[in-house]
Every structure is written in C-alpha cells, then in structure tokens.
Length: 171
Image (cartoon, rainbow, N blue to C red):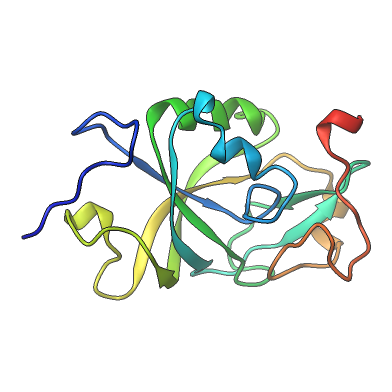
C-alpha cells in the first residue's frame, strides 16, 4: 500500500479529523481565510460532498449567518467541503464556531461527490459506499421560527437569497 506524507506542517502520525463545512468557511466565502491561516493550525481540502440525510440549512439572525439546524430528516441534503484538520485547527474551529453554545460539533455522514484526498490509510478514504463520517457544526439551540425559514441546499453568501452575510469585523 502506498503511503503519503502528512500535510506540510503536520507531525507524522498526527491524528487528523474530518470536518464538513457548508457555509462561510467554504472556498470563496467570507471566512475561508481562517482555514488557510497556518497560525490556527492545519486544514487540508479533501473534497466536496453532500450530507447523506437532509438537514435544514437556513440563513438566520441579524448577521445573516448560515446555520445547519440539527433536525436530521428535514430540509435538504446540504452541499459542502470536506477538510482534514489537525487538533490545533479543530480547537480553533470550536472557538470560532462558539462551540458548544452557538454550535455543537456533531458527527454526520457525507456522500462524497469529488475526492482529492490521499488514497493511503483507510481512515483517509471514503468507505466503499462513497461516504465518510465528518464533524459538522450544527445547532440544536435556535429560535423555533428558524425551522420555518427557507431551506438551502448549497450556501453562497452572494446567493440569490439576497441575505448578505455580515462579517465579524463589521459588527
């Protein structure tokens, strides 16, 4: 079996976690820069996917924040990106996402649409059925009316919804 070196800046043998991002952390979105900032840790893009189960992805609150409501089976299958992150980045993301108060980091099954990850160790590749388990930042603590907001399958801060995200630096 061929082996691949860990991402640059990662210690050999360091445990990487998979994180599925669906909102402002995706490439081309307002907060993607925090995944590229090496002072926060290491995040390596692995591929694109869609949640196996539907979830309500809504844009809510005074700052138009995309939020994945932890209501599996409702809403739509949500598109996003899969990253392998080191412990430092995972810890940074927990803080960035206000975990566990605003968001909770929970496991979710993701159907892989495109895979650019390594084909080395089994934990680095999708299962035979094309799925992976990833962490996602979803919320079980929200205003009841949010469940009735329009559900989105693929978030873009500049999307036709017209609800522009208000970046933290402008608040």
